[in-house]
Image (cartoon, rainbow, N blue to C red; front, top):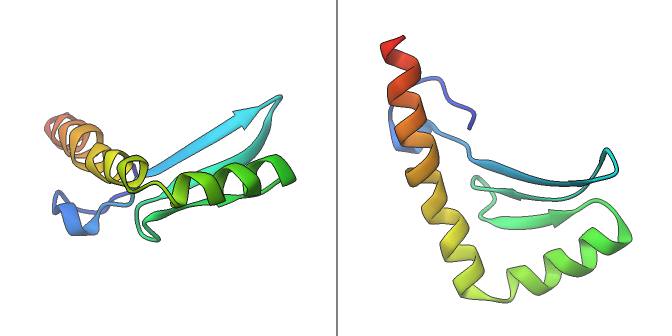
Length: 76
């Protein structure tokens, strides 16, 4: 989660998929889609982006994961 305030609109949720120290794909909440960085990642990103349930689930995780943790961070 990348943020500079507690407002959900100011939060960027990035979910990176890494194998053998190489990021092959990533979901970016600002883009609202997956981006592939390797041949394997591009192929999977295309498949995931075509499935609305996968995108909806990742978009929901922005609120579930980031908003909760930002509250904890701001309290510290």
